[in-house]
Length: 88
Image 1 (cartoon, rainbow, N blue to C red):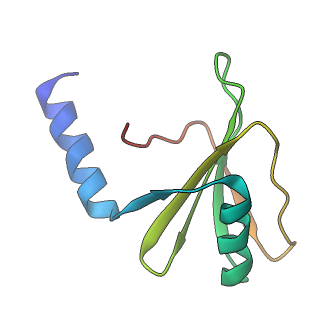
Image 2 (tube, rainbow, N blue to C red):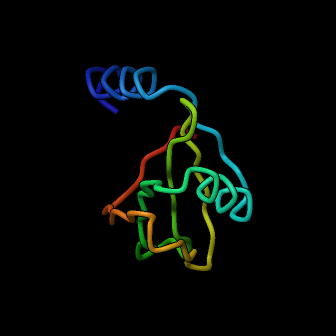
């Protein structure tokens, strides 16, 4: 990765706060607690067979990956993303 791109990626991670990876059932629980949550979803790419989900709650960003598509209440806004990037 080019040095400028790596620096920009690190700055974005610092600006976004802590990313907490949880199991799918725990992610669904976080979304239920927020009521009117916004969930970012990336569908499986060609090589990946997992959906990726991200949402924020109380200053943290929660993230999960799962083979099954998650279902949410109608009050939850789901935004489709081409990809979701998280640090390794």
